[in-house]
View 1 (tube, rainbow, N blue to C red):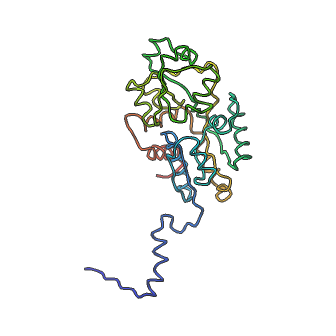
View 2 (cartoon, helix red, strand yellow; view 1 turned 30 degrees about the vertical axis):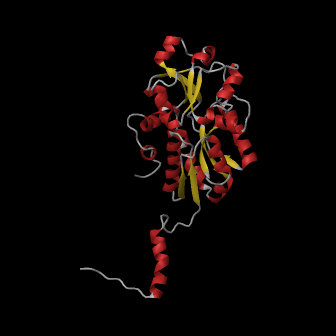
View 3 (spheres, rainbow, N blue to C red; view 1 turned 120 degrees about the vertical axis):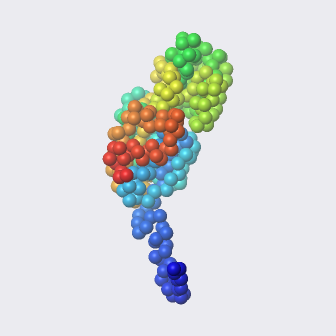
Length: 303
């Protein structure tokens, strides 16, 4: 039996609001929408998804603007109001955004970036996680053993024989190649190669480079048995991650802080390395699924 519906003009006018509500992804919720951003590598995508899913689970309307690009792009999007929050690293904020001198005390770095971001940008740092995704350089175990290469100073000594692979913004950053030359002395590499984060390791493993820029929680370090070169001159500060939020977004949704701070203590370096490898290793899982499983396993969201 087929049902035939017929409405007059007045009935249609009365029906339209109900249809709008029924079709709306947010239903009856009239709350502010929060736009969650991220940079363009696996860890940021996982963290961005964690933040988005946590907020959604607490009834907050969320839009995703993940995979934006490098630090400068994400930071500009935040201060311009294109996004309301994204995961940032204390060391990156200290050096790349604030252009301050490096320091090693994690709590002091966090205090400084929190105060400066509030004063300069009206941005709020939520709690930092224990994980430390410090910048680093790594090479294969075979290359390390063949060249007795275990420190950055040793790499600098043989710089003319080194092909270094890194992500696009590494060359100019104070915590990148420019900083290396300031701390370790000016040197000239055989070749400096720039790759998108998604193919950096692939190029390195294919033999296009001898040394690769890495981060301390990259899953590939253990997955590919890489040797991380010791930062023996102390260039890099700690890189603890935290959600950085627009102050006006917090004013509109003050519960954001408590919601996101709940996950921060769980994010250790070991945990984050494992989560990254789930995405970037042989499993090749979707960052959203990895984030969701982690949140469910830790009782932060419902299945």
